Image 1 (cartoon, rainbow, N blue to C red):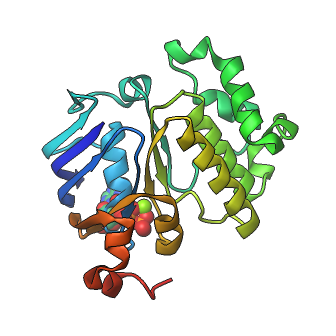
Image 2 (cartoon, rainbow, N blue to C red; image 1 turned 45 degrees about the vertical axis):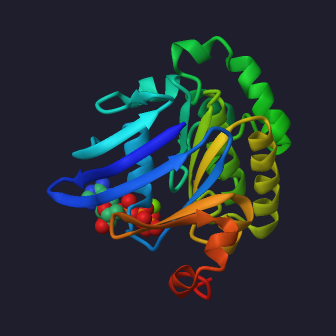
Length: 235
Ligand SMILES: Nc1ncnc2c1ncn2[C@@H]1O[C@H](COP(=O)(O)OP(=O)(O)OP(=O)(O)O)[C@@H](O)[C@H]1O
Ligand SMILES: [Mg+2]
């Protein structure tokens, strides 16, 4: 479904990604792991078209995404839950959710999309008229996920969705993500907590200094000494 080959991306005059290659198959749950500054967020941003690529290719459902605007990628079924949530704190929960359905194709289905989000996260229905900035970290993350779902994605890119989320809500959110995955949505998850990530995904890639350096199924990674040296024991 998604295929990155030798992707390179610059931030200004600085190279952020040198050589990122990965593949996500339809309905797969895949992790993208790596240290701070490794290039995880840049990779997700490049996929959805926030950053231009300077080398390599991004292919999604057989099409080359090079140079395509983010709006077109969203319309094609890619949605990003960005690092740090990026909500409009002074706008209501409902208004934030509606931002996810601004594309003409999804706007018509907004009411239905909101209903679905409220069914997944009932607390958001209760708080729909409250300002997003007044919600707890976990509830704000639910809004960020709900906003992504409002565009009716086939491929959901999640950038550290559990940062600043209380443990109890982490479990709630994981349950909902599993439900969404069971409904056929493919996911690429960036996560700092390696144990939590490997609990959720079927396969993962490790990115280091802008390069994918390791790849494997959950089982293969857990028993890989190189992977263990890099990560396990860190969290
Ligand atoms: N907007 C930007 N302008 C300039 N440099 C950037 C920008 N965003 C990221 N970088 C740099 O690009 C590299 C990759 O950053 P990126 O945010 O993709 O890493 P990350 O793996 O998501 O890290 P973290 O775990 O801290 O979120 C880093 O060296 C970072 O400093
Ligand atoms: Mg990041």
